[in-house]
Length: 291
Length: 313
Image (cartoon, rainbow over all chains, first blue to last red; front, side, top):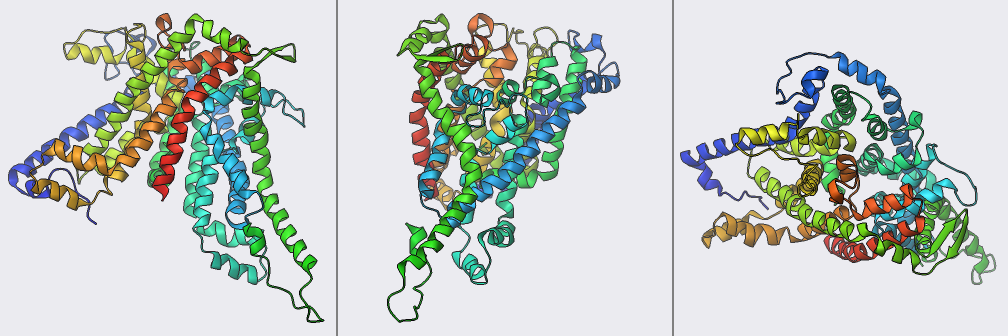
């Protein structure tokens, strides 16, 4: 099966077609660069302007003043180091919990198939039907007073980690991948006396590396980009995430310092994306329709 | 029950009679216990942070909570919510937002994917560009737009001026604020949809285009008669997802206009829920409004699940 463009290739082979192709390619490259990279350039360059220039009308495209110390001021005034470390702590903690508990659950549902397993999977998937924002209020009340253990998880990382495990979409992706692992492979290991945990560790997980990558990215990016939930459950300024911390300080700092802070806050995920873009983008389409 | 049918083969008993039935049960029991052990952690998390809140949402909607004690109040919460002057405005804003998001947020990534797919060069770069904003922390992206939209020192009005167009009060004008929010949100979120459409476009068999060309079809007719029918399933899934996501919009208006916006022009249903719960501590009203949204979206969710099953087959 060959894929095709809308414009017939034969037309592109002609000299005039080739010229038109080049011209439109150049146009599209410039347009996309302006639309998607332009605002980021505007952000990073405005962070270098002095307090006067950044709010001057008309705005300047190339900074006329040069104040790189805005960036160090943003780092100190907004305590970005703490916010960054907090976010990393929440994101990778959530990742660890999801990798252990969701992988174990998906493995059990796919390969160990306990009694009522289908019903449990159904109830997990049913949570995808409930709009997330509708659940925020009762979830928040639950975090204030967790039933049975009667703990208040406000301002505790558990308020991020434990709810992140209820990611039915990740469980679904993992289970679907585990389903495709041939039964014979696991049966052979079982004959050799390997228990379920050993089979999971030594056979299933090594084969599942691609899907584990996809699920990990979803897990980390999910926490990194979340706003409403961490704003509600982590009110203590010393425990806030990057998103919430910058938002709550955004009105108290000069515009150029705020913009420098936004630039700094954008860098970690942009760098990770540039490094792992192939995995992230193929994971997105392989992982189905979440984006 | 598959767990029982895969029990080990009958054990040969010393006296040659039928195997002792009880000997099989401990194995099946142990298998089930192990399997449930693997499930336990996730099931507990679901029970506490998902299933219990789901039940609680329904209970809250019909209760009033004062100083820790809850009393049944029937439909009172629903009446309170419906009598709020912001109620109809929030719904009409949310529907308008959804309509705008369908025109922009649904069409723009599809057109972007069609354009990117036409070129043999620079595809990797173009894909990278459209996905960049998705990786930004939402606060950075939204506040960047707030700065771009600023009527005094914002870049957008400056660009419009260069094109000979009048400057606008993007976030301060009640007629424009919702559109401004949708444009920002499309820029932030279109990357995922674009990449999914691109993958779908690349699975269209080339012969279909050739056949259409033999029939003399031009560019638009090829899109209408080949591209769209061939990607119909992905398109309808993304359409439903877009509706479900935009009906729940919160972060963009909250950060751009403070939530309500000029004359309440960006108040959405979810913002109203947020206000009831976290500004007025009226959890009952918040739950009642949430339940309305849930019922409305349940239809879309059910259609989505049905369609994605069809895609898996």
